Length: 138
Image 1 (cartoon, one colour):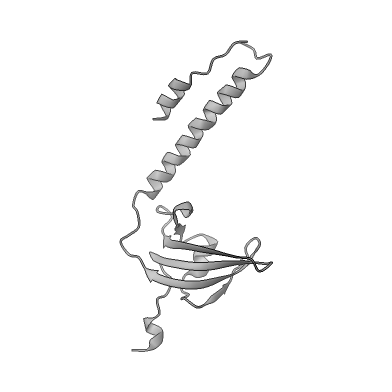
Image 2 (cartoon, helix red, strand yellow):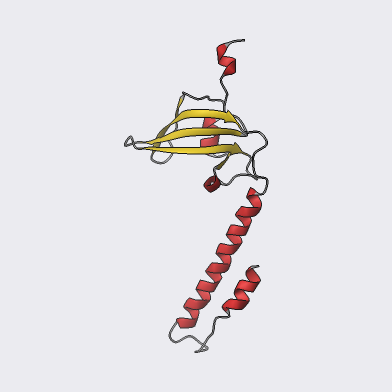
């Protein structure tokens, strides 16, 4: 068996540790698992395989430097690659939807509070029913 066949290649469900290098030479180290779009949640370390970064990394291996001219970045240094089959949380999309719904509900509460304090509003005294809004959120 060739030595090159023993080197893990980045593919779906691989865990990758890499350094993102910007145009000034600043380095940010990131670790993520390459997943499908439905599973993706970058904040949780799950990178969508169809993002520009995901597409740039597929097929490469640890030790490579991949040109990556996106925004202020210029390259990605791949530090480690490991297979992570079977450890991807299947509820990432559900968690993401819940976070979006919570943010939308909080935004609605804020909007109503701003409206209620606005001077010269059409109805004058307007009380925000925060309890009802929070109940609707659940």
